[in-house]
Length: 177
Image (cartoon, rainbow, N blue to C red; front, side, top):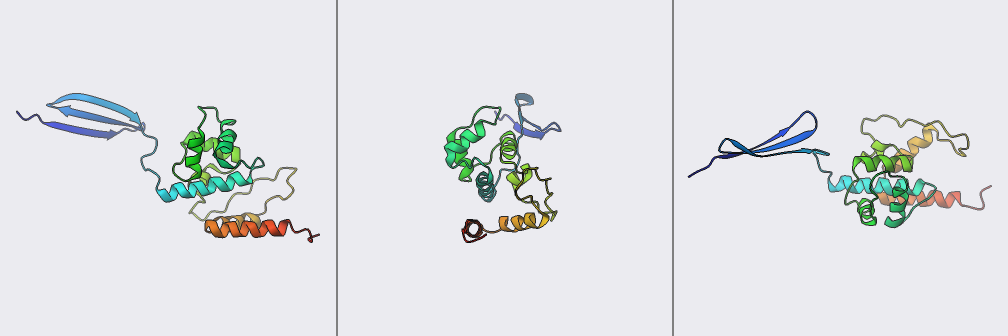
């Protein structure tokens, strides 16, 4: 006896996927699940996210270093289930990218653009919008400084590190007036 079996996968308009298994014209199993992301991020995308995250972490006043400090920094701001140190370690090592709700919390906490944190600078060539400086901003950003920051951001991680070290040395030079 040969029983005919077919499977159907259907992506619905509401973002759900339905899987039906039909055995001998009787639907045996129907499963609906919400799709979060159809395309899995590549290894390069995960590593690039990690670099952007580390860069943003160096720029916040708290400067959390290491997975434990970053997990604490994140969990104090996140309203959902706290993340573990191991999860943050995966973010920092470029093994995973956080889910959208966590990305949103990270972007707000780090005061960076959500799209930039997740995907990097836009490829459409548009200029970065300058935020109005806070009244107590010692060095308000100019269009030139943002363009320079974008150029530095597009360097390889090693060259970006060298530029940051050079600027730190010049900035901390006691001979400068």
